Image 1 (spheres, one colour):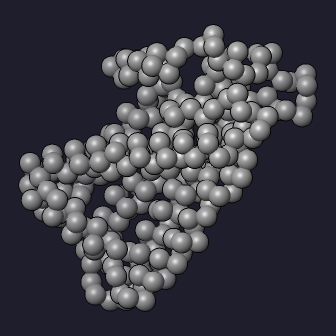
Image 2 (image 1 turned 180 degrees about the horizontal axis):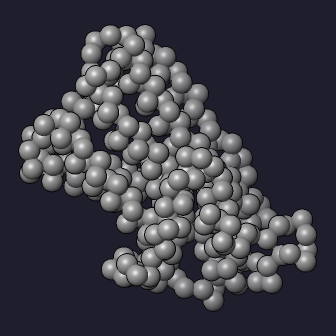
Image 3 (image 1 turned 180 degrees about the vertical axis):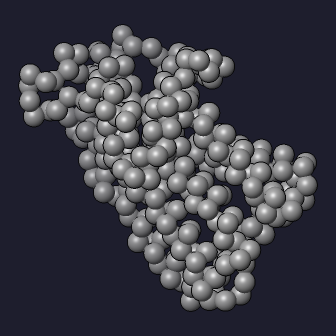
Length: 267
């Protein structure tokens, strides 16, 4: 497996196994690339497919379902070796965009959307659902983390915005697979009807997908040893369960509403 072929991050409990690199303090960061330089390098690599590690990006996608905490071990290792938590390889983003393309085509086929409607739908999903919502969530959690959750001993450090956006991309992938792929095979046969079991099945998919998003987001921020009180990131789970119960009580089929909304916005 890919994780066995890569060196594991050093264990803090064994001094002889610790990285010889200096800790990422303020003076250490001073010799590193600026955020703008990192973004430029990242975006430039999007056009160089041979430099991307697609095998490892695929490994990360699979582990986001099976063992998501393993994915963040690599983020910690990158901090030790490259002085940044955020990805420097756009392979994950490229694969995620490819999955979006495939699932959007499946949505268009399921809903009977014409070609130009598919193009509009794809652009909306990428630039609004993925990037737009991601920028808002990443910026909000970046501000909250750096303002309220930094440990007193680490005030000279900060949480990278790029890492916050990577956490969003990680958490978005299960939502994409569950609501934009798995749901397509169940919609017309099991979810679209007015039966209570259909509403329960559709809303349960939403519960699992959003639960994954919250949990993977929590794992991302709890992997940063410069933050405390990261358990707050699990708080939305209680509200999610409450909304799930309420939606069943009033008979609101979230999946059918999602399909109607998608079809409406590409007319």
